[in-house]
Image (cartoon, rainbow, N blue to C red):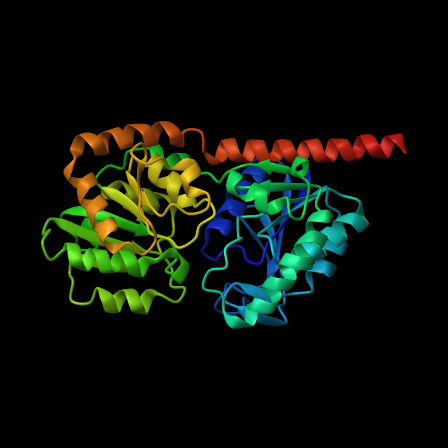
Length: 388
């Protein structure tokens, strides 16, 4: 099968959506399929000179963007020409609310191929720049309706999305299929030197994700500084790329040797080391879809403390997988961090529950289910073509 995958960004951009795309694409290449990714020529920060390359067997086509509206919103009409000149069996777009979803749908309709779309749950109006407000209104009233009408199938990553999606499309068009994690996280890391590398001592509390205002790293940083006033056997690591909050986090935690802001970490083995060096994972977000890091933490046997937002409460049950703390509740974060670290029996029960749950969310399993949707849609198209 010749598969087209469309999103604003792809490798080497850091982000959960880009991980999802890469995990699916590279698995399908190994299974003998031909995979083409279509994206704009930016990594969010700078223009990428190389417009075409093959990375791990995946063909990457980057079209020149004309202008940008925000850190993650670019306009790149060249997508139309790229899709037009490639003979694909199916096209799979990612992240709702962008013009390229509509363009992909139009081209799929013209080429008479199925268009499957994964939303990635962008439905909360969180810290959006003012310039995007008119576009968000346009998305809600017009663009999403037009785009979803041209989708053959829509994948929601959490049931939380269904009532929202039914404003624009029929429920029978929607399938819920969550994100996944890599099997390497189940394997015990020997001679783990993560804390040694960063000069950390004590029980490690981990933040792993983009340092973006919606992720709330500043809230955990405030809690960390306050905790270290009385809890001397703790340390904290903030790991991830800067998306506007790194300087603020560094300012909050300055002169705190037990708190490290490391920047990005690339490589599955290094990510596994990082998770397994920690005692608890904290996700203090204002909004989330269904973060990959939730399942990565589960597979690593970590208790999780997270905000009860969007898709998270569907997969994190209070007192079973960890704790839910409202966004911005600094005292709540401090209380639950100490509770899980000081109650070894409770932490071990969370670990047991989370390891069991994670086995249902491997990338192999998610890729298989996604490809089954591809097969259903292409088979249906073949049957309808034969009939007519």
